[in-house]
Image (cartoon, rainbow, N blue to C red; front, top):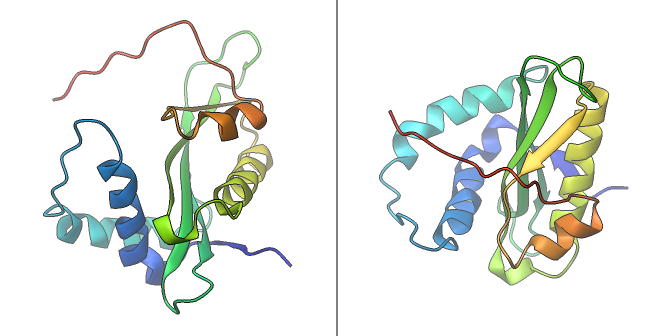
Length: 156
């Protein structure tokens, strides 16, 4: 029996807590949590959509009831097709986080496995993510490879 399950609306507060752990670990991150209250209703709605283009997979904390140990979330996006991806479906992985007290137990790997299966089941041809140096060995072991083109961003 797998420890991994699909996150539900009841997990939303814990999903935000683990996302904040991930955010706090990034260099130069804004550690504010003021946005959580505004984000929570939307997250609950998205977690309730079983057939949507968003999924989160979690592992429950083994010692603390109603607490999550690990989280992986992803979305499916459409981009105009091209060689090796004529249908244009692209998966994007984000918010990979494990509670500091439950790391090195394989939870993130197990959650990633479920998310990758979810992508496959939805016809996703390629999956992208950004990685910290600490997480890079996990992604390398799953077959992710760096791309030469840099990511640019514009905030509106």
